[in-house]
Length: 398
Ligand code: FCB
Image 1: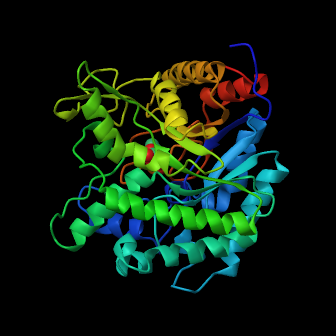
Image 2: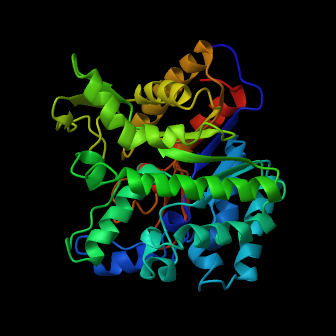
């Protein structure tokens, strides 16, 4: 791949609950402290205070974009009560990124909710969408100069979490599974309920309208793209399964400014459904099959299913202790990504998951970061992969 894409975003991604620390007013904090078998986020990476250092490391390496989130549980600690100080905090983050030459890609919802929202019935409550949109409204006051905004992160995974929270509330189940760790390894999780998916799509569309009226940002949502493929003869089964798991969410993005593609691995579908990742020494720390080619499959499918909506890769990466493997995986994934560009897909950027080794939804073991973090001193230790990705970014092509 010799050509570069003008204006291409080269960056890394994070999510507030996974890095900020002490997100005590969120439903995930409550869950971590109640559910058996879950580790706690605690101070996380203390990025709530150290975000400038995180961003500087990315910018110094040569990256030009940073995806981070605004935490609803902080901005609206009680229903209808907006914290001006927390909004100012996130505005400072945006300004810091801009000053460092990093384009902020701002996520407004990444799996977590304020406690009050969850306790009042979460997404199943009839006022849920109004509540979400009212929070979105509050964020529009600080988004000046932000070009890229993601409303909801992985609504297809969020729909599963809504189902699990509902089951936990009604006493059907006591065990909570981490959506990305236990859930990623095996298809133990059910298909997301399309009714919940449609509700989230409505929330996204209403948020998009508000953002469109009050900001100049490009607006999209980010979908967990599973790069599903059919075993011979099971193409029909693939279509069916892919609709509830993915396409419902991709189709809902057809009028968006971009689609956020998030890809880690690929799975086959046979007559019994999604085939579990077989146990293999090459599997990643989250139990996924090592499939750097997944990104190409995911982007091609997203591009088609959204009727050619511009693609921003908002997450791609690997849970591994071996940084050489991270470089090998990412280098191959980028090669596949740029093949899709040569085929004609409009790809606007690549944001690696993740900037930091962080709290992986109930677990600390799977490390996805370009930067290691000492959990006691919070010292940041950039890995060779950060330098490597920065060089790719400066060159503008894999
Ligand atoms: C995605 C999530 C992200 C992170 C990665 C590994 O599903 O959006 O927060 O957990 O997986």
